[in-house]
Image 1 (tube, rainbow, N blue to C red):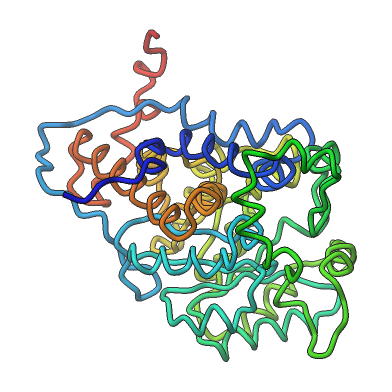
Image 2: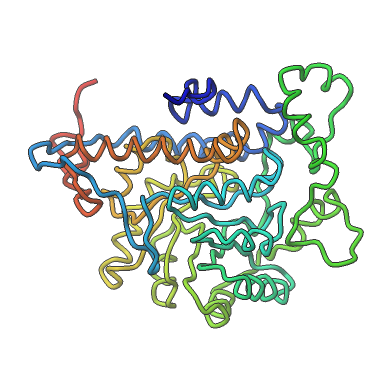
Length: 398
């Protein structure tokens, strides 16, 4: 009988895994991944909104066996959960992006590489993991947007994700409070108080000095990570518009998704322009504090799009912490969900094995939720399984 590692026994759900990551990481590094903008109202709301929608099981429908798989953009996924883009994953574990991509591929799902990854997009493509997606932004220098797009096509990425809600950098006050910088630097007093984080320091001893934004480094350039990070905000274009979306649609030959959609009008416009998929997202509450939660924005976007484009994939990103959360999103019309912070917590705890454990937690919880709901397939997750569909049930006691 194979023994289960102690960390895995302790990481019995995503919340417990988060606490393990908090203990293993220096506080500035943990808060960099965990924090949101300003008061973090939107960050909290992303999770709270799920708790306000109750499930209404139909157990007599018979769901002895459950099929969690789906086909997305012509590729079969084992479950409706993907790993979304997170910058500097290599800060949480050496070669963090490569570790997460391997875990996703082994689990049979997709991995989206962040524009701000430590590795280059070509290095991740060389792993051969699939499906792999690539994130891009609209830059003041449109030539750089085109360059990243062409590099992703040449490297065989299967989908391109244009993030549209990062045109100005969010005010992340935890980072300001901690004096967090990229790369992180610690005072002697901070180092003295990091006895529990010594394994992280030892593990990162070779990675930290060479940490950089792999996709932004020019051949022969002497730019440091600090220099690159310092000018990151200045190269994004707050004046981006639908013409930029059209130009990218014309240039990119494969599936193109827009990430950061919250308004139904923008969702409908994207569908009319031939966008292949939408990601309902507020950037994990890291951009505009006070923005609507992703889960609350989902129903209006589904209504705005599905009447004219019934098969357009709509993915939800933000606040999914339980398999039941994912079931609720699918019942409201989402095609699949994305996670970001949880995979960073998994990385911090155990690298590739930690991310694999994260995905297994979600798979197991979603499977159990579907069985208890009476849903044998993802198509069986319908609005009728949500209390919000029955006005007389919305005021249930407790």
